[in-house]
Structures are given as structure tokens and as C-alpha cells.
Image (tube, rainbow, N blue to C red; front, side, top):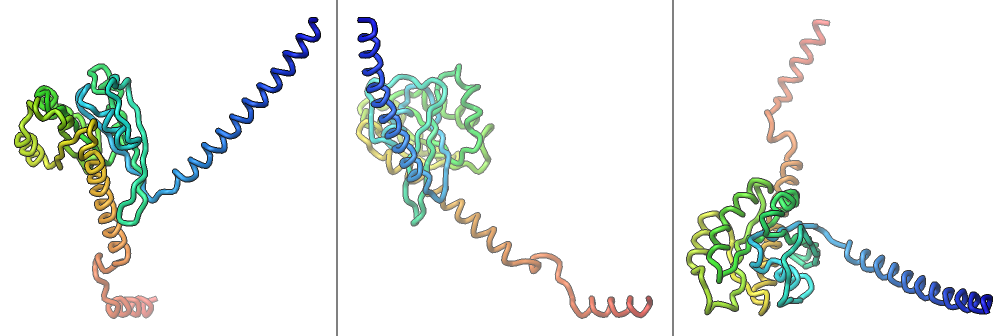
Length: 246
């Protein structure tokens, strides 16, 4: 009985192991194929989502990257990120979107993730005036830790709750204009302007990178003409005089 039970156990264990290994192999191949396709891009842009807890940053992220919305979304712990690839001007742009926690206790952690970011969506809740008041603090922190050339968009989320509006759209537009930010109101729930906001900031980043690249190419092709002009005849005369004196 012991031998038979042991044999049966070994037999079924072998089947189970074979099944699991087969699944793992298929998963491994799928991951490799997905990674190969995902790695085919021209530019990689890191964009951070910042703002108070509860303004809808995580749902903006999930709506843009997976077209999903969760009514019972919990507060982000630390930092999460997702990616999505889009086309801009015939180029493949891979957007790496970082969702940073809005709670005070995670501020020290998230500050490190500003490094390398070329874009930021500064999000507030249009139904909660306090989240808009805190935008100044978030903007100051962003400018303290991020690159000085970072592209920033002010986003008023939850526009589907316009009947509960606490932040006038004119106030947000005036603030954005004063600080040199672009501005848009969105609804992650209804998917209003979510695609447009991300497409807009990624396109702006691309245009900046493109202009800098063209400027660098023009400077390189210009060569010595931008430096001190050299009179070839004078140089030859000086060389001849030196050779005579040797």
C-alpha cells in the first residue's frame, strides 16, 4: 500500500510538474515576445503624476494605460508606474507614467522619483478647494527636485462632478497662465480629456526634444564658422617668416 501510494504520488506529481513547467514556459515566451514588441520605440519619456491623495491620479494612470477605472481605488503606497506607447509625428514614443503617493508620509520617498522626469501632470480635485490650494506646494516641490526644463500641465480632475465644483475654472486657468503651465480639466470616470491631456504633454515634450536635436545638428554642421575667423593668407605669411628664421 505504501509503495502504491508512493507510486501514485510520484506519478501525479510528475504530471503536475510537467503542467506547471509547460505553463511557465508559455508565460516566459509570452513575456519575451511582449518585451520585444514593447522595446521598439524611438523615445522614452518619464512623466510623473503629482497632487494630493484622493484627487484621482491612479485612475488617470489606469484610464490612459489600460482604459480602466476603479470606483474603489485605494491610496497609492509609495510609487507605482505603468507604460503606454503612442505615435507622435511618425515616431514611437514610450511613455513611462509614474503615480506618486499624495500622502505626507511618502513625500521623502517620492521626491527621488522626480529625477529623470521630463513631464508632470499636477492634479487637483475640482470639488475640493484644499487640493487646489496645495497645488502651489506641489509645484514648488516639483521645481526643487526635477529638471528646470520639465513640461508641466495643471489638471483639474473629476469634471463629471461639475455640480459639486469648488474650484472655478477661471481660477485654475489664471494660476496656470501665471506659472507658465498648460491646463486641462479631465474626468477619469467618463474618460473625458484623459487621452488628450497625456497626448498633449507627450507631444510638447517631443517637440522640445526635436528642436534641441535640430539645434545641436546645426551647431555641429556649422563647424569653425561660429568661432574666431582665421585669415589663411596671414597664417601662411607668419609660417614663411618663421621658416626663414630657422
